[in-house]
Image (cartoon, rainbow, N blue to C red; front, side, top):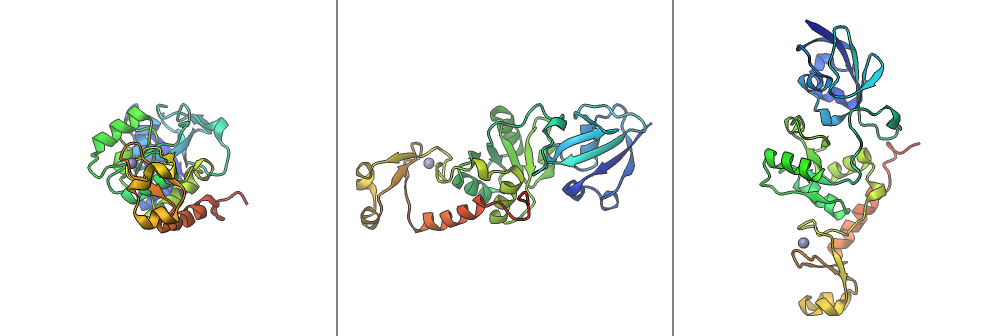
Length: 253
Ligand SMILES: [Zn+2]
């Protein structure tokens, strides 16, 4: 029988049984269990984990546990540079692209608004999300931790907040998205990059009040919708500007 001791740090404790939070504890491990196997058996989706140390040394998810091993498990770090220690994944995804589960439509909409390619369909089933994530190297967004335990999902985020306005803030802080945001470049309906167009090209399709008041327009090449900087755009703009300012609690102060 193999017994290892485990210590989970920071918000990873949320996933543990209450009596295991915040301190080291011993757990029996299945024969030839890997770090990933045991971390998930204890309730923590592997996508939430950024660094695993066994006996003080950085290891991958495939490290087999031996009797007496001491395992320390850390979440994604926002501010600390731990790149030299990273072993659990080959490399971070170069581009932040997402697939949101069926319950996160509001968040998907806000991600598109800030320019992040996000697939979402409220008919997506778990298998489909898993397939899309692997095929297109997308980060899975969900509040379902079982989904994040699926084998082929390598990059995922367990979203803690319940309201979409708080969820987008959470993701911006956690994944440091402000730097790569490109607000109002994607179609909110179908996730397609927008094209700027001359007013003359779309004038015939605009309501008269809009035609008189606005000068800048863009269109979606997929769904053909036309966008302009109306009152809805202005309230979105105010929200996006707030997101682009780092949260004072998380910024490197
Ligand atoms: Zn569109």
